[in-house]
Length: 249
Ligand code: NAP
Image (tube, rainbow, N blue to C red; front, side, top):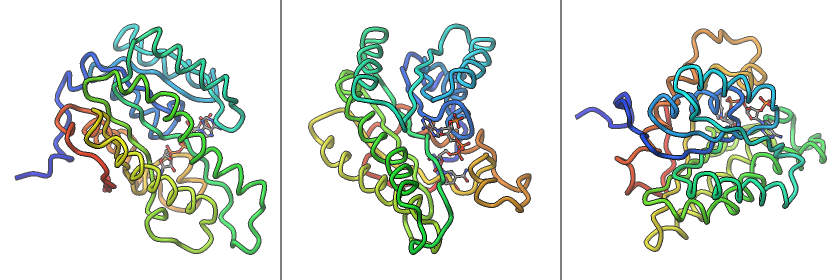
């Protein structure tokens, strides 16, 4: 029997679902948002650049109609009120949330721990972990109102096995794995919210190019291909799957 993760998503898989995606302006997040809309979801595009989000929204609306809204939120600078306003807007506009996909992250510096710049360390940990925690926390009331909600965090191979020079990024991804496990355990049994983490593997994006500037990007998997795994975790067939850490490749 084929691995269900690799079966292409069927048309209408996410029909009627409301899915929020961070990092929706680029790379994997952008591909997930577009693929979710393509499969019937209403999508909330979260990112820091209104201009880039508008371009993604226009692409979605051109093909699928008015199924995308924009939420500008800079995860480095957002304050409590910004998160609260976003959560209130989601409840007011949609009445619930069926999926929350965390793709936003920064790489930081690839530097030995001995020389790692402390403010840079704090920035990476804040964007990659703390902001994802806060956003999840404020959106949990909306997720609890869904019959079948899926929270997906995005990790990395260096978040499972430490690797020299990956510094704050690697540590942030270990933390994301931990956050996912803790939240999954807390949601299990008494809610309909499932929580999992995906490791995309090497994917052709700006972040990958930043980390490996001289590699042949054409040889890498595209964001569109890994987006299918996110759709699988957002769809009804994984409603009983929680607390898992899954490799896309
Ligand atoms: P990417 O193309 O660089 O996209 C990163 C996204 O995060 C962009 O949308 C970016 O927004 C957003 N972002 C960065 N800082 C932000 C902030 N302060 N506030 C709000 N949004 C912010 O990277 P990607 O490769 O798609 O990465 C997606 C996820 O996959 C990340 O969690 C990454 O760690 C993980 N991952 C990627 C790979 C890979 O090979 N690509 C491998 C393993 C894990 P802007 O467009 O405004 O910059």
